[in-house]
Image 1 (tube, rainbow, N blue to C red):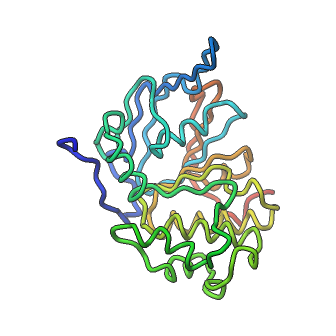
Image 2: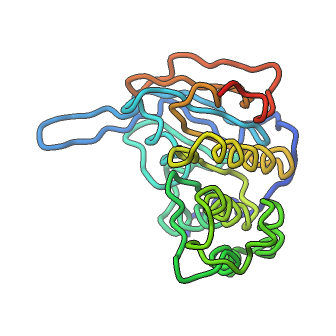
Length: 251
């Protein structure tokens, strides 16, 4: 193991810390397909802070998912540096990255990835059984207003309810970071609003850094900051002085 392993502790602070949770400098990711070189990210500099909600906006192929995967320890850098709480993720061992993903990061994807043969409670327990300081599955489901659906199977739940179970599963380990890749992409507007409201509550009540990928510019109004990407680069960053409640967004 490295001399300075990645931190595994959790934080529930709701205020933005002076030091960034993530510090990215010159982050570059190049993929090779035969002789073709694709620069998915090209020199990204970015700080992300504890307790904020950030939206990543950009067209398909702009680098949003690659950036999210690198923040989550699912992909590696070709060049540049990325630190989390001052620890260098780029030099982390595979074991350290595994512990980082398991204990520090929660993932929410467009599709719910629930196990059909398990109830809501059992799907969440898959995470709480291996996390060092988890919520009870019931507590996480209650936070997402699913107390009456704990013993239902995914086939007995609506799409929005399944996504909320997926959110409960992601937050049950008390992650420092919640990474959301098009979390409402498979939902209708009404259901999507419910899911976004749940994510917003997690951010406000638990102080979790939330990063959301979306193609829907409307969602940007619920964020502290909006980061625009194009061709693997950050083109500009918009600061929202006031976050709008999800229910007040203009769909």
